Amino acid sequence: MKRIGLLGCGAIGTQIALAIDSGKIPATLTHVYDTKRSQADNLVSKLKLKPEVVANSHLLSSNPVDLVVEAASQDAVRKDAVSILQNKKDLMIMSAGALLDQSVFEVISDACKDFGKTVYLPSGAIAGLDVLKAVKDELESVVLVTTKNPASLKDAPFFDSSDIDPEKISEPTVLFDGKAKEAVSLFPKNINVAALLSLVGLGSENTSVRVVADPNTNKNTHHIEANGKFGKLTITVENVPDPTNPKTSRLATLSAIELLRQICTKEVQIGT
Amino acid sequence: MKRIGLLGCGAIGTQIALAIDSGKIPATLTHVYDTKRSQADNLVSKLKLKPEVVANSHLLSSNPVDLVVEAASQDAVRKDAVSILQNKKDLMIMSAGALLDQSVFEVISDACKDFGKTVYLPSGAIAGLDVLKAVKDELESVVLVTTKNPASLKDAPFFDSSDIDPEKISEPTVLFDGKAKEAVSLFPKNINVAALLSLVGLGSENTSVRVVADPNTNKNTHHIEANGKFGKLTITVENVPDPTNPKTSRLATLSAIELLRQICTKEVQIGT
Image: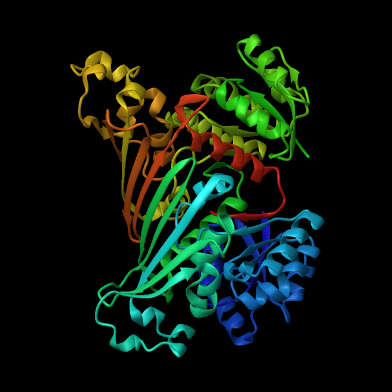
């Protein structure tokens, strides 16, 4: 059974830990770390099988774990990913946005090859990465339209330099229409989906992103259109927010749990 | 570098072999087999690095290969899958329809666990298996609508017991509206997509399938709607037929090549 180290004990980390503890993911959670010690202790208190709380992130991968799950932050990816791979551990990354920085992506990608390890990124709150990966070489366009309630977007830096007051949006309003690369800094908390699409497809300079604030919705909706020699792909995912963490879609957590389950299982694995 | 054995040297097997030979898939094709020896010889003649043509399918997995790719037929899956796993080789299956037979699925699934090996099924001509896998436990409905030109459907057993003459269809016509389980015998050559959806989701007795013949299209279009506690997923994939094998979608071949590439690579792997 694979031994898992968990980096980040917030809402998503907790749900992953509970999925391991319940046996849904056939693995053992052996070590956990959070920059807030109390958050790690709080997580451990909820588990039947108690993992060790380590004193720093380096101790996660210097211990005999097989895979580290990052559920912390883009900063944690920048700071810890390479040393985890150097320590010959596989790594699952939740904060996919960190990889939009080309230099970060390259150093992590090189570390995978150099140390023979794999970095896994779950599909998050979208569908269709299976197709985009397969047709990457012949994609012509990828457009993402993300629609959320203004309340889910109001903390975004976008509003610092905009005349739009998120509290006063009364009808569906296009906040941003540009490339994924620009969207990163304006909507950093909402960028994981755009990051995943950019990484599998045309890159952040050639992936179009539109962000719509719609006061009439309580869903996080991602609509994707992709064209190429293979044909045409159109996807709409209407996501219910995660009850334990409304900023995240429930699907993003479920997707991470499923990917980890697959990694830990010898079985019939369906999907590219 | 992983060593690959190829079972089936038809159109899809040939494209996979060429992708290995060109270096797109970082692996070595060491052994090939086809029930028609001439087909295997023909494939080998197209390759720079010549694999050995073996005399029967058993010799594929008794030789020191790491993974066998089945690109032959549902019969080949029924006949050879378990012995490949028993020989401690991983297996990639193209003829996913074979696994709709519950007894076949179970014996293969058990063999994966017993022998510690993995069976991989590419996403084929559809998208969104990543989501369906993740929300499997809370799916409420999955509906597939497949639309093809009547010429792509005309060999189906469906027409043996139908008054509809595929040559005379002059407008979009619903040929079948039922469950995936019934669709298998009526449209066996078109069943891979319905099989994949059934396997990841609600099973073949609870997955709805509609087959539409549309004389105005030259695409193979799959439209999927899925609902559950996570939210709602809507996907449309309009597939260009594969130029080397018009009965297959180009995406199905590309998807298989991408999955095999991932299996053979240590890298950043994106998607659940």
